[in-house]
Length: 409
Ligand SMILES: Cc1cc2nc3c(=O)[nH]c(=O)nc-3n(C[C@H](O)[C@H](O)[C@H](O)COP(=O)(O)OP(=O)(O)OC[C@H]3O[C@@H](n4cnc5c(N)ncnc54)[C@H](O)[C@@H]3O)c2cc1C
Image (cartoon, rainbow, N blue to C red):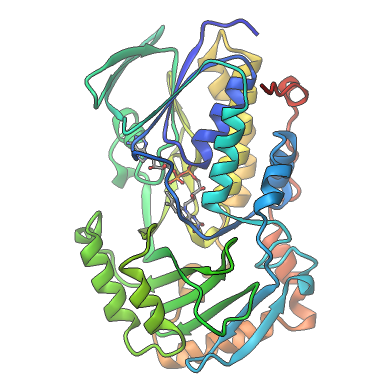
């Protein structure tokens, strides 16, 4: 396709890289700016099910994904001595339960996308350590001033720069307008696999205000630690890694199980990630020639388990609509919003009760939480669990002509 449209994508996460890949395949000139100086590692397993799996299939990503696929056998709840009181093997829910049959770490999925970008013919300009400082738009395009001082004009800007999106702030308004705090924080980091953990099993330990767990990694020598804290919002924590780790140490103190090893390893973790659990709702996903994609525009938080699915499906639809009408990007953005909204309506729904149902504040509540975990794993309730985890399966994914024509080097 021959088009003069030049798209700027802000953010090289799953959403940004997926949309860049599809745009490039459609012959659309694309620039990606990623604030970090290199691809950001980190993140635990993300799953592909229903429409997101279909998107990965249509984008030709499945072979790459399968080479990094995690061998997850299931999930167990453990007490402070490490004894499992509920075990849910993957097959208990036909691969449609809390652990899906295709799981890959977020970092590996991002690498699969970056590899596909490298293999694709087209005009891709990828800049690390760069971000948008300011932008102004008129009827014909968007003038961007980058942090490096460079100025450039684009036909369209896509904000795929995550939950604290700068693109959203610049073109739509301050974060507070769109963000709802969901009652806690989450942290992920890679640790050496503690001796004695069962390979392939995700373990979760609950105590008042804390859920702490370990999830298998692609490398059997390491594991992905995950923590959820139920606390009031504290703006001082934003960006202050020392304060974040102090809070984790304080709240995980005396938690038993493998928490001492997890806390010891946290300090040296190469990919420490900590953020608030927040939901993002933006009434309109585009403002003229600026569009929002992924967490920047719609986020149910890691509690929804759907962040990557929304990023992939959104990227596929946005690129598909732009490829179908590159000479009228403003209308293409409206069609993108119409197409993605029914999917988001289902995907953003949190499992009943949100963080409060998962992490209780009292000892009695934690005991009830354990009882609930047992009930959810019981045979009569398995179909309910499968239905809860398959909420987006009925969404009908539109097809685009570019589907059948990915170009490879
Ligand atoms: C390091 C990391 C680990 C994560 N781990 C998990 C996890 O374990 N489980 C889970 O459910 N979710 C996790 N998430 C969130 C998950 O990746 C997203 O919900 C989902 O994949 C949608 O991705 P996204 O591309 O919209 O946003 P993100 O994954 O947040 O990607 C946004 C990208 O934009 C970049 N960026 C930020 N600001 C700017 C800027 N101003 N200019 C340019 N670039 C910018 C960021 O560095 C990042 O690479 C993680 C996110 C990150 C960044």
